[in-house]
Length: 346
Image 1: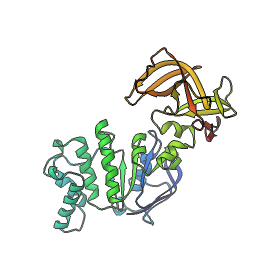
Image 2: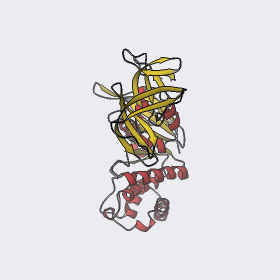
Image 3: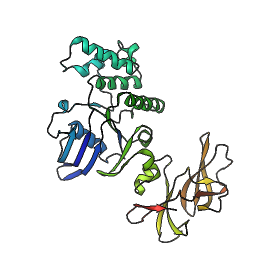
Image 4: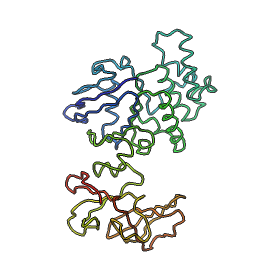
């Protein structure tokens, strides 16, 4: 296992800089997830750690060793890609064993590692099958097994679940998280899916335009986003953001120039008669409802702004209906209109 340290890490293609001097320490055994929209620099950062992209400036250290000029295969890391990258003409056993192709282990030791990895990943009954006979989730497990047999100091995952359907993604999230808990190996994982980030990570690194906006445990980012972008990106459905005025702990929709930008998560904006202690009360017209069983998401407009609120699963809310929704004190986030940075709560 190993620590991974990024110091003033920069990447430029010609005159175009895509990573802007980022700093990050990943402690030994931590599961860190890089998340952000397409083009934010998360995959480029991962590829620089792997040695697949050259570093323009700054340093990368793995296990205390600077690796900027170290060949990828000498960095003691294993990478799992989005497209599995397994060989269709080889059996599962041969694909997993391929991770040991350059190893100096004995034939018996290699076979033992393959068997152990297959058992850990539930692939033992499939060892003699070809990839064409496997499901997407099983193929991804083969790719993970090929990385595992090398016993690397760190695993790098580049959007490994994006090609799977929703049910398989959910299953593989659990399997990868359980694998990390068993192995305790350092993992750096890239995804654009904030649900993956929230459910898997020890710590989330939110990136935008080649900068790190926030690096913290999932619930810390959910509860205390540092800016509007992070507030909107983390959490499903996205946080309601709107121009507001604030007075005496009460927030109202701004009709003119806003004093603050306010944000409230749909789960905190409850449909019904708000209490007198509510930090904000909105009245509007329902446009769409989304019954989810345990709750119903109610989309509505108020003073020309769109909102999403939460109602009980058997809510009678219907399009065209007038409703009230309120959020309790302490659940309304406040942001500076100019910088979009968090400035407090109401």
